[in-house]
Amino acid sequence: MWRKLVKGQALLSDFSISIALFLVIIGVSFFIQKEILKDSISLIEKSNSFRYVEDIGKRLLSYEGDPPNWDPSNFNSLGFSTEKENEINWTKISYLNIMPYETYKIYFLRDLRYNFFLNITYMNGTPIFSYGIYNENAREISKMVRIAKLNNAVVKIDIFVWR
Image (cartoon, rainbow, N blue to C red; front, side, top):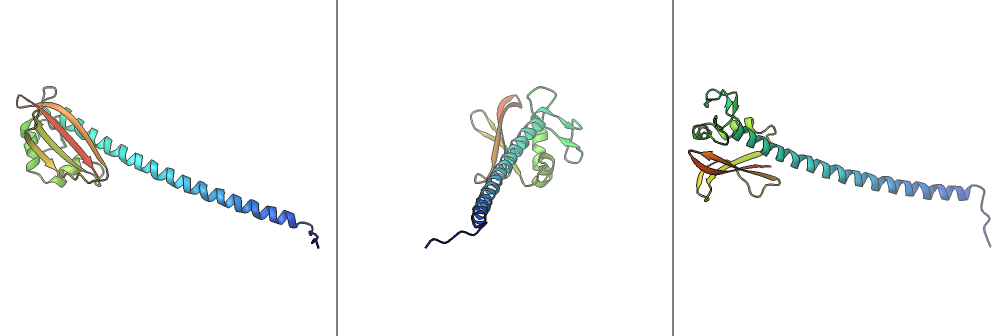
């Protein structure tokens, strides 16, 4: 009635169950690592867009450029500030309309998968100047708001970096 177990048969079934459990645990751990890696990459990309918008803000508003009186035919780096603190130069801003967007994009962003948009308004919301490409349906949008002085008026500068 009862079948007699052959020596080693229990060991084989224990081994099979152990292998199955081990493979399930390995599979679950690979899946978890993949998800953690995907989240880490997403955080790094968001960090990059924040870094880009911060970098653009610093360069535009805290730096005169090289040379300080640069123009579209002669510049090493771009900046819109004047000698005075928190003041931007209208002439330098208007140069944006002369050169193509892709040219400035190379100077502002290190990663060409990103785009930028610059919007300058008076404090009451009246538009003064906008430049770049804006996509409100983008996957990642980082925004920086700065207050500066332009032609003796206080203005709000919105800088968007998106991908």
